[in-house]
Image (tube, one colour):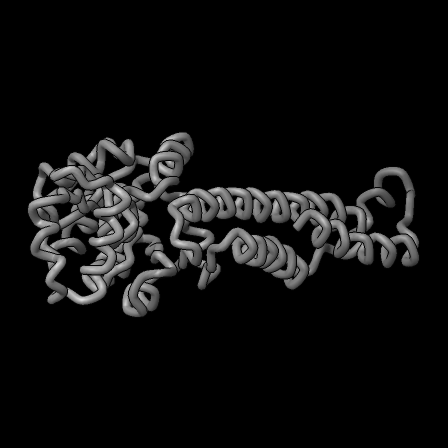
Length: 279
């Protein structure tokens, strides 16, 4: 009986990785390397940029309070007309007839994604250049327990290094040009697919849809893949440990049983599908 050749173990590991990469593509994430897929299962800290990552990344109408006897719909229509041309004369009376609240709103699924990441055993940190008050308000809406506020863009990578210095395996999620050094510094960089090309180029994993749920998918895929690879290697080890002594004639010396070449060839042929099927 021949042992499982090394190339079959490699094929098993390769097939274990690549179906998950394809599955990730269907789940709107793109994993750019096998190394990133293998490292993601060890992540214990996820650092989130604020603007465009936790939030939508652009101003949105959060509140409208009409004054002066106009209805809200009427004044919003006037506001839309004024927005088409900032020099439109209707912009002036709007100042005294309508109070608009503009905010960069938290994405609908950010809180759910944060909760799912915490269930996976990861610590969540939001990293932003905003002042502490604004950062705390956004973190509250996203259920993010820890905030690093007022961090200058050039110091974001330093914060990642500091966390790594604490023995953490860090994943960084960002979308802007200023996030690129931090994405490159992190053990796994994850870029929002709707972000800048610079951030995407620096990242190991791309969240194509822009949703933080993709981070959850990436970690789950990585853990499932590594579990599958370990199973494949275990099966190959057991097969070889049992097959090599038999092929060497151990049964013949003990009980006079000889292994037929036909059976040995059949066993060798079965070894490949058994490894590949598990993968």
